[in-house]
Image (cartoon, rainbow, N blue to C red; front, side, top):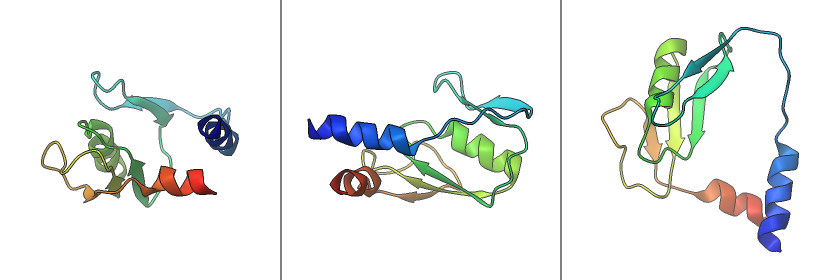
Length: 99
């Protein structure tokens, strides 16, 4: 029951916005990629859950000329050479679940 309650809190935290702006798909086919607003203004990319594919993060940072801070507690190092600042931690979900 606790997992269901935590999942409900996470989904209620996330919001879906319908924006009438150009969108683009980035990332590899193997990771399915993501559709994002084409020219989203940002200063840094935070990625919680890199796993064994960092194609999205790499392409996003190249397109937007930003740095990435990536978190993942399931891997010991990045799957390939990258400019991503890697932190081996999985605290986000654990902390969110406690509150």
